[in-house]
Image (cartoon, rainbow, N blue to C red):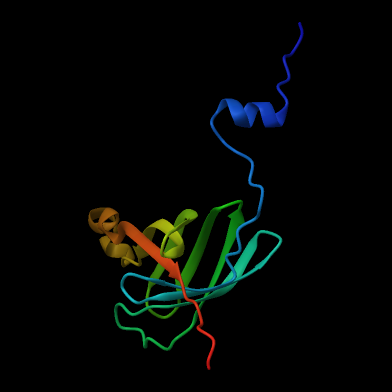
Length: 142
């Protein structure tokens, strides 16, 4: 029996995906609609950096480390809000409009539920929502 092998580029074309001509640059600082910021560094598709939240009880100046991945214009990253009992992951895609570059994401946050309460409360420990990050641009000084 013969196997039909479809070249990778043809398979991508058939499912609607398009090759990226220019790799997007995610490096730098981005701010979401709630004022929280994320600062990315990238090496070979691996993301590192930190997140500053403007929500909840952490001091807004606290830098929470992040780790993640970028593939083309898609990215995902996770932050451990160590000491505050939650982890959050964002997954999304970069794009650009007349206002500039942005990253549109969906996030999932899980908070720790005490073991004795897990049977009744575990699903309520996971929440989700959208977030859109805009690149912070530094205007040259005169």
